[in-house]
Image (cartoon, rainbow, N blue to C red; front, side, top):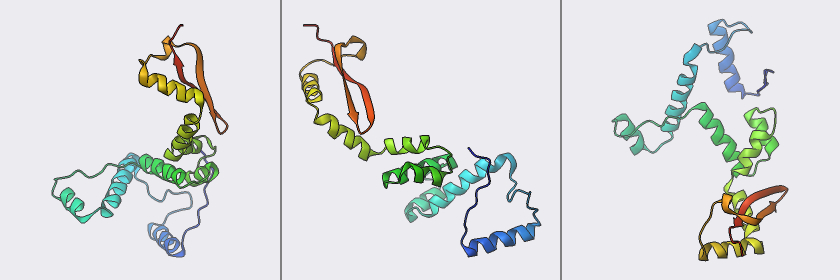
Length: 175
């Protein structure tokens, strides 16, 4: 989290509307644009939910208006997570994700990238070509599964890219 001011370029039309609002409300440069107090998170969530509903199919909007379906409850945090995940799914870098979400480090952005199904497929392919893993899967299909506390001897580890994956598997055979 940063306390520095964020400079954001707005389209001229939006800038004109913001300037008009500031002039009409006679706001000083130190004033908050919208002072909603403690109700701000609730107001923001309701606004997000209403906006998303307006993009929903007409039959769903009608069902919500009749009380037959619930209005989706989406918070600003949900929306930020969705943006981060969507950027990762589209191949954005950790730097790009962190910049767009306003993060000062890459830690969270890297989590979004690691959580993508594409990376899970890469991991599965890398493990699938490992003969130890293939043998272990064959034993799992023909034997019984055991918890990691019961594993004896060697354990399966593997590298995918520059990341070590450990405790992938083991065996309880003692002979």
